[in-house]
Amino acid sequence: MITFLLRRLFTSLFVIVGVVTLVFLILRAVPGDPVESILGEQSLEVDKEALRECLNLDKSIIEQYALFWGDVASGTLGELCDERGVTVMDRLVANIPATFELALAAMFFALIFSLPLGIAASLRPYSWVDNSSAVIALLGISIPNFWLGPMLLILFSLTLQVLPNPGSEVAGLTALLLPAITLGTGLSAKLMRMTRSGMLEVLNLDYVRTARAKGLPRHLVILKHALRNALLPVITIVGLQFGALLTGAIIVEKVFARPGVGMLLLDAIEARNYLIVQGCVLFISFTYVVVNLVTDVVYGLIDPRIRYD
Image 1 (cartoon, rainbow, N blue to C red):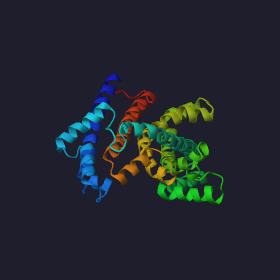
Image 2: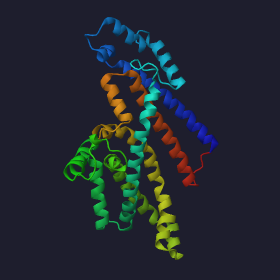
Image 3: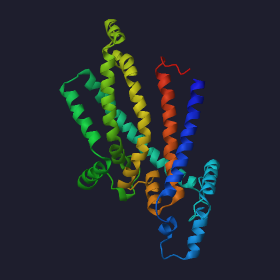
Image 4: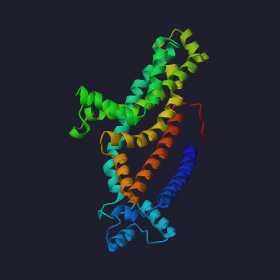
């Protein structure tokens, strides 16, 4: 296991280096002058030069790359030009909790909705339960977040008025419910079909039939013997999709006017704020790498047949 962890950490380091380099190069390959985009064409030349110097755009690309790595290595990701003394990391730290709260709530909604329905569909294949779950899963995958979110707002906030409007500044669970459902619907559809197919495969194996032949209660056979192995591919999907939830939160946070990394990133793109865009993309990429590593470790702990050495 230790060898596996070291190997995965080493490969993850290469991934992070590649992501940092790509983010740096792509942002600087965008056509147009970012200084004029931020300040406007009518701004004073002295202000343009000051901002260009602050962003290190007056230096060569090699020097910019070295300074960029210095900011990454220091953990600050650079000091903001319009807010002296405030770093990109400060802005990320202020917004990350809201995004993680939304992603975890969406994951919780997806799990509590998909697992029971996926198990029920596998126990009665091709029944009305199975067919209904297939229709729900198809709808969940097909409906995009940017359409589902406004529709839920119109129904529950404006028409029925049972949940707060995004601009009402109401916090807590009621304000989190609609964004979590919007973000978790697509994931719950995928997990539901994965759970169903995994259970169908495991329920026909010999060890499950043996457990039944021993006279074990049906719920023990399903939950203890079948579900544990059927969840292996589901765990992989959950890990991989957690990163997707963070990127999907960009749209959901905008629709529901929630603070978070998504809103921070969209505002930074609109203002062409290099430093914050770099920081947000690096944070999302780093989260992907960490979640994938944790998923691999959990996968091995659940399935003792796997030997990483």
